[in-house]
Image (tube, rainbow, N blue to C red; front, side, top):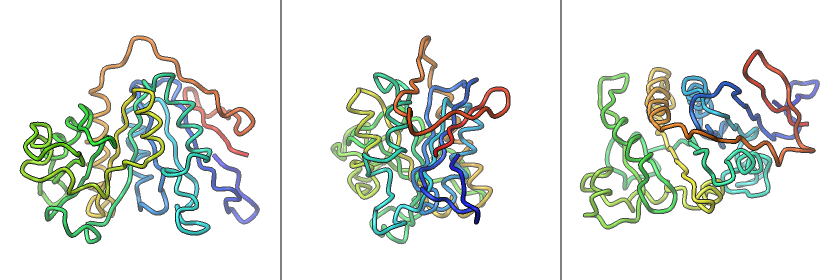
Length: 258
């Protein structure tokens, strides 16, 4: 993690990047807006620990810290966050990234009432990961005993079986504002033939401690249900000259950005 100054403040905001040396799930857990998407970091950390994912990436600054979008690492290709994503995504993006975001339903009046989750692959299609995660959310009760309502962005025809599967009678384009289509990590992964899972969680989940745990459990279930390839190599290139390793316990190390 990043060194702090004498007032315990960040000086660069480059973020924190964690590797699990005894991983069980072939996944990256990414938190690009930990300060803007309130409590998204908490959910991401729980997912990383519970799923025993390969690695976790967490940005270190508010997305608008020096002006609108100046530190929005999900849309900046020249950030440390994106370089780590590229280095750890695998040669063919075989290590799937699950990126945790947040939204306020009040800002999306066109969404079905009570929408708790919006999922996306970012390319207009509906991946197997999105189908699995949508089904898990739709069958899970929140802290008030109400089923969580999940939808997915896609550009398929309304009557396409995949769209019906994740959206019932709703058009997938209804959720285009949260589709993650310009997300640079998603674009990079898909460009190599890999998968990318964009997860948007409403305030009803993120502002409730019990619901945060529920969401983390659901996403963990989706991650661990993905079969582990027989041979995988975690690439650490791309961080030379930026970060160095710090030993933490028996099986976990993290990168400390200078």
